[in-house]
Length: 473
Image (cartoon, rainbow, N blue to C red; front, side, top):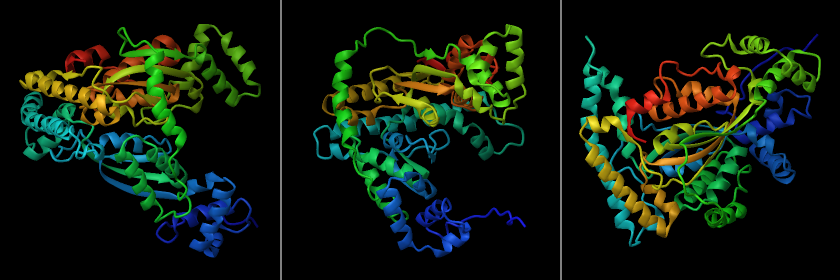
């Protein structure tokens, strides 16, 4: 008689994360059930196992079974970028779209304590928060006039309905020093790497956060992350490459804010051939040749069969991952905060700077705040330039969300389809909607068959978004 089929939880309330990791690891060589393996383990035995196999022999994948939930509070948005850079983790962050920021909720870098530039830093940050506070009510009135209160709608319900629309605009004032809370779910292997990156970071705040994560994490996984240390290689590259980049590349001349730099010229063939390969009985080279020789009408029919039946909640097949794209984009920092959440792609952001100009939301003008907004941005820009001459990393703290950021993106068509569908939706922030529609336009021009199946919002274009929401980008 066959053994009984079972599916059950190993309860993290009853078993430490390191013990759960060992329980799963031992199944590769033990005929016992998971419950029997777990019953024989103690925390000491689990630690000995990890010391031998994970640390000693490098079987690091075992550490992926030890999962932690970590609450991180009152760290700067700048530090959050490093914290959230790990692909294999989950993050939920305090939203600048749905919450109003406390004017005292900002980070004072340890590097500046007692320094002659501390007063400039604090005056700049406080000025930005003051402008942020002053903008809330005028912009609320603008959005109220555009979205009148409905019949039988309470004042509180009306405020909930429109809050994100005016707070979305006010957040352009917020500096990178603004504090945030982040909930983190991460496995011990990824946590160890994240801690090492943070301990190697040029900012003292990020280094301290790395040390705190290590201290807190070791309460649950004392063995698996105890060797998370600074990485000298990362420190050396951080110190060496700014001078090399400045010396080797001429940065003069204007650049398009969204450029499709490269893509797979035969990406459509690759995707369609991979789909046939999945269900066929031949090699991939044969499938590629067959697709390349198809008439255009049959290629279109094949594409429709592959993607035409998708609804809005069904992800496309993984075969779309065989086509790739590289974009060089410039987007305001507020928009980048949305974009950075798409960690399955490869992102290379440049350091946050005040040298690429800033975006000016059109409703700032409608609220009569253009002069105040420009004055706040100029104050931040001047402070940034002064701080940058002393410490470029620290200077980024004073840069508001309105300033533009350059980032290099590389993703496959499947990841891109998800990004563009989600970020072109009507409830997405208008900065990232503009980018999603522009990238979609360029992908569709590059691969018209598969590009035509991108599920972007059909009711607006990037040009319409730019005209409606921006007075300056």
